[in-house]
Image (cartoon, rainbow, N blue to C red; front, side, top):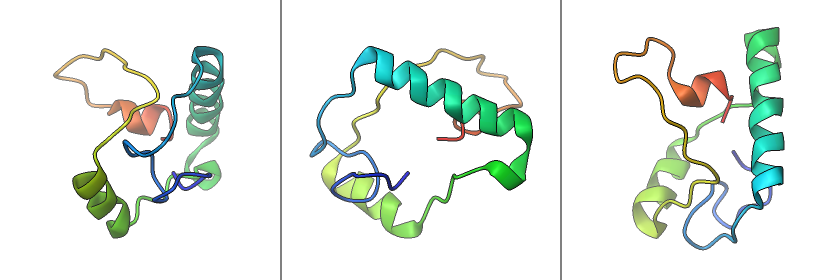
Length: 79
């Protein structure tokens, strides 16, 4: 989170992400996850929750996972 988004996290105010860019970001995030927590860039701040509630979400990708998963998708892709 944080990159160049208007509110620090992707909201409805941000533009779309091209599919190849989204896939690249997901792969990079998964590589960080595999390397371990010390390489993670995830830093979800309380103000991000407020921004998402106020301005809406605009995810860059939709990923299907198991409802009984013990590994949340946002952790596996460090997003």
